[in-house]
Length: 189
Image (cartoon, rainbow, N blue to C red; front, top):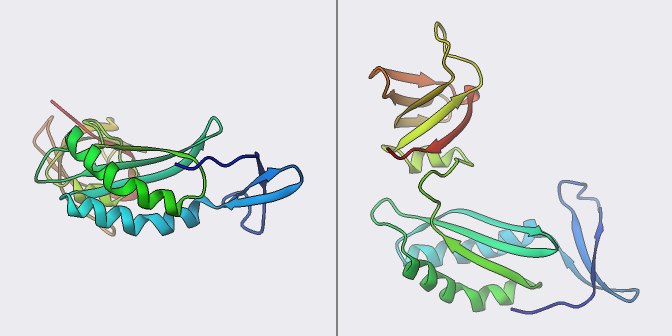
C-alpha cells in the first residue's frame, strides 16, 4: 500500500455534495484528486473476476473514508459453499497488488463473508438469498393485520411484483410490495 503525504482537503466540485472530490495538498500545491465513485468503477470488474475465480460473488463492495482512513470492504458470498478465512485470505492476496495500482491512496482492505444476520442493502439480495430465512420489517402493516415484523422464507422476488414470502407464524404465503419493505435481514434459527 502506498502512503500519500499531505493533508486531505474536501472541495465540492460540479459533482455536488453527493459526489465529493478529495484532494491531497502539500503546502499549496494540489497532489491527488480522489473520487470514490470513479475508483469503485475501476476496481469492481477486477474484484468480480477475482471473486468468481474462487467461486464467490462480491455481494457488496464499499470504498469509504472513516476517521481519516480509507477502507475497501468486500463481502463475498456463494450459495454452494461457506466463505472461509482461507478463501478471504486468498482473495485478498490475489487482489492487493492490482488494487494498489488502481487506488491512489493508502487504504485498508477487508475481505469477509456477509455475516449470519446480514441486513439487505440492495434488491439483488432478495434474489441471491432466495430460499433463505429472513426477518422482514414493513413500513405499514398488511391489510387486516397489525404486525409489521415477520420471520419466514424468501420464495421469490420480482421488481414489479415485490417479495413472495412464506411466513413462519401461520404458514401463510404473502406477496409484499417492495415499496412496503422497510428492511430485511438474514435470520438464523
